[in-house]
Length: 267
Length: 241
Image (tube, rainbow over the protein chains, first blue to last red):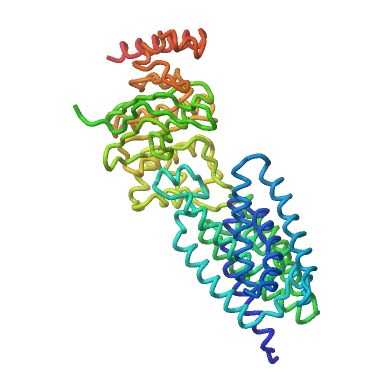
């Protein structure tokens, strides 16, 4: 079988995303921030549109918009006027709707919104690959560098602070990590689907490991398997690639579910 | 006179226009055992956080001895069930500890058998002993414990305080503890500080129990209960010696 270059790019890009999103997804699960990540991804559409409109490029614009959105979210949460999930419910869909309206106003470029909402990993370009691997290496490096502080802050913020961890800086770095990774990968996997790649591999890995590091590595591996399986399904049966990846991840989860229950009962 | 480990002078904390703490002056010397009591919302946790330097006082000052090592047990530590982590690994997150130190700390709190267990499956009593071991791994000059027996049944409270007493007498570090188990802590505590935004009264347990401020804060029943336990405790010691 000879591999087309566009398929090879999709494979390399997808694997790169999965390797970063897997470990990051563990923190999303531990910190119960799945909905936060989802909201962040929703704001990406506005970033993409602004990127095309202003000509500064899709990736930088998305990172800026997602970053501003994250700051807004954290600030509104700190006011404590609404429960966190209510607030996210408002902002996630508001930002998606604003993005959709902005996209409809684009006159010069016709934006295929569906491609962004549900991803089109098959159209990954070389410049996308550079963004994926550039941001990915940066994100992994940050995660490894901050690992102990991130784990401590996740377990108990005051305890971490009492031990000299600058919890504010650590949380800020974590936000930056999430922003960059989601901004770069949501467009490719799908704005509405990226959360599943954060959550499903991490959730699947949980039962089979005994350490946070183990969970991060296994989540990365399961993410890569999902990408490979999903792209195979996309190539073989002409499934849309984003949903195909998510369904593969879900099938892996479902197949391992009986074993998860078995492992849990043994503990 | 030796320098106190931690001393607070006229410290005040104001949040949203309300004074959470008002003119607190307090010092803890090496080897001292201080118990902070007070109703819910009295500012006990805020006081501990300010003493540790997690919160900056709005007025007044807190001085900690240079290089002071603190072992801290936070209030209500509930391990995240979605994070897989064993007790041994959790303890290894303390900077600069090796396996030996972890084994020793677990031995000190009678919890060697839980080392390889998952943190999230521990019982309340086991978890509190692990948290104490973690605090001890910092080789503390002072232990700061925020309601360490919260959520434990009476048996669990009793055995935790017994353990703490052993640790205290064998290690000789100072202890500052917030606790509601008045009748149980009187045995070990040298000094009681009764807090309700300000220090209502402080001193030896017997003196505090007689203070009218204490009675007005906790009611007659509590005062009587304390007096009874105080009395019993003294008698026990008469038998011992």
